[in-house]
Image (cartoon, rainbow, N blue to C red; front, top):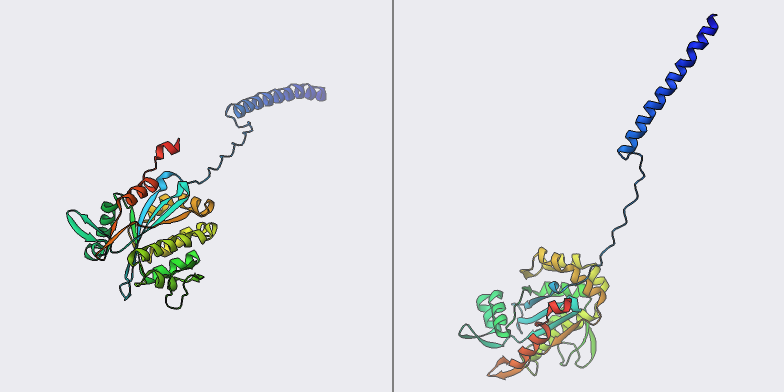
Amino acid sequence: MSKKKQGHVAVPFLLTIFIGLLIIGGAAVYIYNYFGLGKQTELDEPIARVAATATYEDTHTILLVLDTPEEKRSPLTFVMMRSIPKDKKVVFVGLPANTIAVVDGKQSSLSDSYTRGGVSTAVDFVNKTLGIEIDRYMIFDEEALYKTCDIMGGVTYTITTDIGGLKANTEQFLSGEQVKRVITYPLYEQGEIQRAYTASSICSSMLNQADGQRIADGLDRSFNTIINLVNSDITSADYKNRKVGLKDMLKNGKGIARFRVADGVVSGGSFILDDSFIEDLKKEYFSEDTEAKKK
């Protein structure tokens, strides 16, 4: 009797446990699913990488000045650089140091403006003479010029005058020291206009001959090196805002640099820019309708 009684009690006891497990388990499954704990989430689609390309906002104009006061030859050299990364285009315009113009009612020369009032006065002279707006300036001394030439890889160039061991009308590689010797040479047959032409031509050739991919890859390091050697109002923020466009231009552009010869007349040892040259320069490099091109 006792054994039969134990078996009779065990059956409903087991059923009770089984039913309880079903209830508890069901509740757990409901909660698990309700809060999404049992759902297998799908991986988000990877975000497409946007290509880093140039825009017209990257366009800028810089007045480059070589100031070598220890040089007994021609201590001041001026080259304006207009860069349009969107169009993969850079133009260097050599400005004769003896260029004269009437600015604010007073006649002055570019070199005198720089000597008298510093680079800001020289920038103002160029802005008002050409009717443009220069964004920034960079003043190079001898050390900064040499380092920049080293970073760019030097230049192979044909000069037109025998200058201190360099033969005229012969293509030859110029180091930084030789570049300085050529662009500060004071005895060119055509005077300052030829010297300005030579300086802008060398800048253009050096950029076109450089390995664009290499320069672009090392641009951050090169900027930090050069900006610490020159006197400039270019900031790290300026560089950061434009470096994408600059790298895009350098990597994807070939033969991007040009140079322009400043047209004008020589009068009494001074150079006067021709109005048609100024208008042509502005039309080609300063009057692009960026909104139309974006469309």
